[in-house]
Image (cartoon, rainbow, N blue to C red; front, top):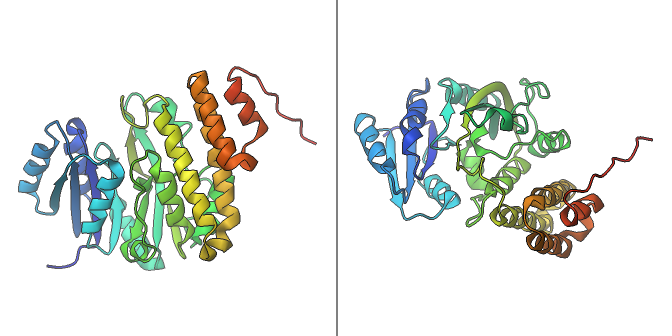
Length: 318
């Protein structure tokens, strides 16, 4: 059997209402040499039945079922089965423009790129206001005719507050991913923050396509739209602690300043995220942040955790 050009990994958990449309947007890609690896992560609705019905019509879809182990483990399972030249991670309730994979493949081959990334839009009635705060559009900041180094583009996007950790905006050479031995950290949410940062950090060649190829569905009760909980905080703190471990590795010494900058950003984002929690929980969060990342925690973040209603004036420009 001829090697597929792209392996698409789709974790599936109780998304029956959107699954056929989502998978259809992959099957309808203009690039046809694909393998679609759907990982049914213990769905309790009829998601598996829908997948099996689709597979009967298109043999490019491969289904792997497992007990519910979470998004990270489902993605890792799919990646372990991937045989394509490139890999693309997709979510089972979203949409992809039909020309996306062809454009990314052509760009990656032409430029010998490790990574090709692109922009996104939002679909769904709950998404329009949320979209304003998501770093999904970078076309006004980046050039499509430049081949960037991974740490270079990371530094630029982080400084502009336009770094998106969504792996659904990234098309990756499988050989590169294998060479850096990167998988998703299990058992937390916000695992993308760790995976995507490390993916970009070590890449030699990164290209950008200024198109809103990916369509993120904002729906009730998803991770993107659910209220903040201690799981969010635990996820962010775990990501920061893992990044701190990488910063101490000798072969990551050249990236240490950038890693520490990202840790500082995430630490203070964690503090600002936690202000909606109850007082006792906020104090526990503050203790963890001070204990692990005290020198990176900004004074205003401490004040807001203790007094979330406090109005802090910005220092005047000098």
